Length: 329
Image 1 (cartoon, rainbow, N blue to C red):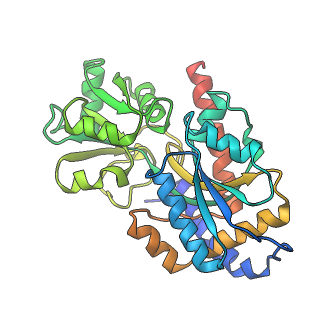
Image 2: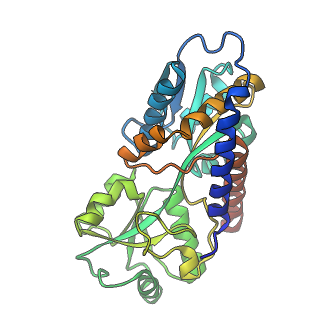
């Protein structure tokens, strides 16, 4: 299979990361920086995927650099509160660093009119990308159907298939893109998070849940959930036989509708500090010990350098803008 745009980007990013790590020692350390702990701001509550990502990265950064890194949770407003703090409110001195997620952030700016612009933040590293995954209950009325059959059923029986999603998030929009592309019509059921949707699926209250693999791996392994499709064009490493959008003939942008976990700082942070931070993160993410630490908590690293993540960051905003323009809102 030929690599798609996202997998090609990941390959280029891995090569660039290795080069960046080698060059990290040549990035001059700013005078007097850091002289106190650096805060990783997470715009979500403790315990979620982004929080776990930030805490794992902080621990590894401390191991590699000897500096102190702390995680500060600033949840609320669909991540807008924490994102705004990093972009506009915190002092831009390099001691406030966001561990953020797209396309949620882009949706907040484009659709919810968050009080900051995409250009108010500068990506300095990509950590990983996890695509949305659709699943059915193995004892439900659609248990024997593959995703193409589910789509045909949802087209013939509009609204009969209930899909649990987080409103105005990657899961929600990816599901609506599928509706527009295929003519299927679902009943969208809103949930505050992936875990409640998974519980509802297990309880038979919905027919399909949209989740990240890490959230529901135990249920797949236990035979309680069946993976139907991946909201990307690259097969999911853990589920290589689950069809992608490309496999299903559905047009969907690569590396967008899922969780792109990235590191970003205010655009007002001085360039020497920004570049130094980027070099430290690149060095840390390149180490085998870091990869093992992330693997231990169920996260596969797909690291990108600042330049590569900036490309993906811009693409996410373009895709979100395009979606809402077509949707008329």
